[in-house]
Amino acid sequence: EGGSRRNPVLSGWYAYSYWSHRLEPRGHSYLVRLASGKGSAQVRILGYYCLGGEPGCLTLRYRLEPAAATVAAAPKGNP
Image (tube, rainbow, N blue to C red; front, side, top):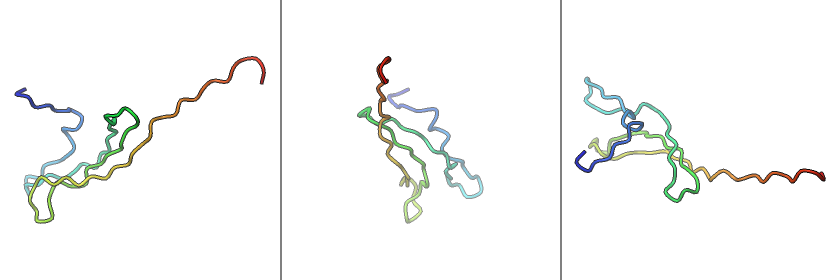
């Protein structure tokens, strides 16, 4: 509401520590479809804090996955 968009799958990427008051990634990997529609990216959130300890600097590891190739079926009849 109010113009914000939330993805319920991504909302649980972290665990909050009441002892350290820090967000810690849960270590999940996510498959994200590329806007071009030509593939996807496997993404893992590694951290949320900047070098000085300030929040808001996401550290990500990702791997681009090309779109799956379409395999044409061989015509029936002659081998």
